[in-house]
Every structure is written in structure tokens, then in C-alpha cells.
Image (tube, rainbow, N blue to C red):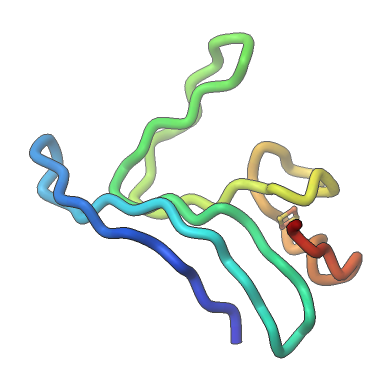
Length: 82
Ligand code: FES
């Protein structure tokens, strides 16, 4: 089962708990995405603003076909964060 390591901090703007975590899946032997919670805005390098959501997973393996978001490909390639 994937687990996230994160540090919760309060968000004065939305009242939702805000956190950024790293998903690790030791049972499947791989590392997963960055896990953002609490309505954190995601903006691309060219300025495109994605829909703000309470929960978002961002690819950190580089293999997603739906970047910047995770599509689960990290599991099939057994991505290992270093
Ligand atoms: S981290 Fe999931 S596809 Fe890259």
C-alpha cells in the first residue's frame, strides 16, 4: 500500500489542511508522485494555470503520459527516487 510522508500545515485562505508529501510504495518496490493537498495551485513553466483541486499528484518519475500529473506509470517502470 502506498504511503505518503508529509508535514501538515494550516491554510488560512481555504481552511483546508495543506501538505506536500512524497508517495513511497515499499511493498511494490517503487517510489510514486508528489502528493499535494489543500488546494495548492499548479502553474506550468509557460504560465498555464491548472484547475485548483484539494488533492493532486504530480509526476516525479518523468514517465507520465499526463504530465505534470501522475498516471501510475511509475509503478510499471519501478521508479526509484534517489
Ligand atoms: S510519478 Fe507516477 S507516473 Fe510519474
